[in-house]
View (cartoon, rainbow, N blue to C red):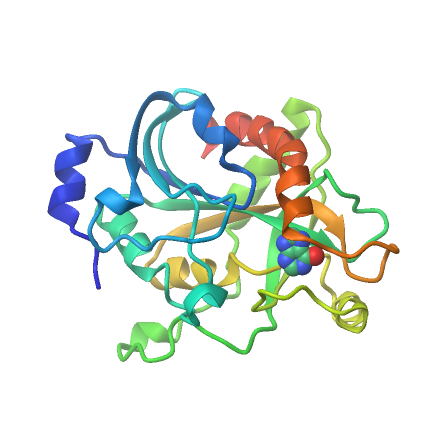
Length: 264
Ligand code: HPA
């Protein structure tokens, strides 16, 4: 099903943006900083994919951040909700049709590294699609053979690093590994992920990156680390912890993004 674009355009009343952002679990706070915000619940937009996950509010927001016109998707549907890796495709196609050129993806993630602690932010330099899934399965055009050599745009990443320096916050780069979820990893899987070169683990972002590159959007992405990976501490993992801790790193990420957006 595709999004009712006419209705969405009507509701937006001529507003447009080059940059769209998808906010991950517990990171919706950025919406409150949007100037001149027009907020449309996904439920008001026929065909717009809706997440049932707590901590994902489900709003399409148009406005300005740091003076830059943006569209923010607060909340995203995940593969694990319905078993559909392409679940976000209608939303991304709608963004493309609205003139968006740059997609900023954010997520909450687990860390595989002792020196990447909860509360910190990681710039995603590259990813490993460990799920075995792909949102382009079933696509018939030759565009399905999408190049992923520079999935995360080098120029936009440089802007993010410069913005972090300006905001005086650390922004290490690293590799994000997609697990399908919704159960968390085992300690053995976390050790494997570290051995394979993953710095962060999560249940989102990779399918959206693949879809966005397929649609010709540039992508930049960052993780807010909410926990050490399973087995790295004595504690069990939980979604409650993800939602609790995400706003800490989320505030740092918000500072970086506000400094970065005017550079994009
Ligand atoms: N693993 C996968 N996804 C996550 C995690 C994790 O440890 N933390 C937050 N999202």
